[in-house]
Image 1 (cartoon, rainbow, N blue to C red):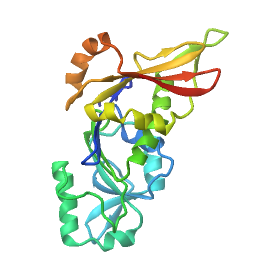
Image 2: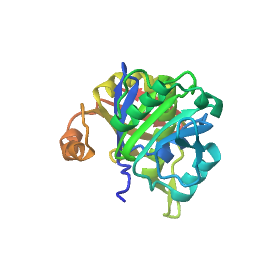
Image 3: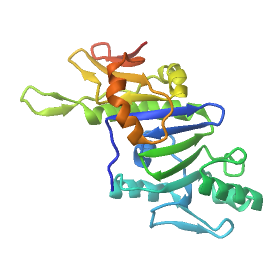
Length: 254
């Protein structure tokens, strides 16, 4: 299976329809960046083995311990994955036939007829991918979840891709705190246009760690974006996140 790239993440935020299209974000990284994890995932297409079956909807579902264990054991080896979270099994049992039909429509088309958020399930997310990490479409009931997840994910991915030399010449990871959510909100207009956060072009010095952001427009395939990256990197950065190591704080430069 092709590995998920970590040189950059691409985000195209659709405000009105409450979803974000992305490259470079996979299921396990997404869940790891979440503070309040869902108790259950309703599985519409999945690779999980340790699942439960709901007789009312005829869907499989998985609980928090099972999907946590799956990520620990399988890492990022996931391809097609479609799920919605839900609070408890009683909510599933109350779904009307037309609601189940709408959920099936979402699963087959990766689009929604009406809002993909159901009061009976109280779901916060709809997660859609045919090749996890290479192209994901994630619906968010609340944009606050998006800001929170991205604020935690950016330092994790920067830490993964950057290291400093210690006194003995060995590499050590640079631990960065969460980016303030208010800064992520300030970047929203750029994400609305389609943007990349580049870890490949980040700069790590003794004083600062800088993570650049470029506005790149609408892309539906990662390969098309990769072909354009050389040209993108020749242009001026749209913004950058800068961590001041001495002050231990983030700033946003535009």
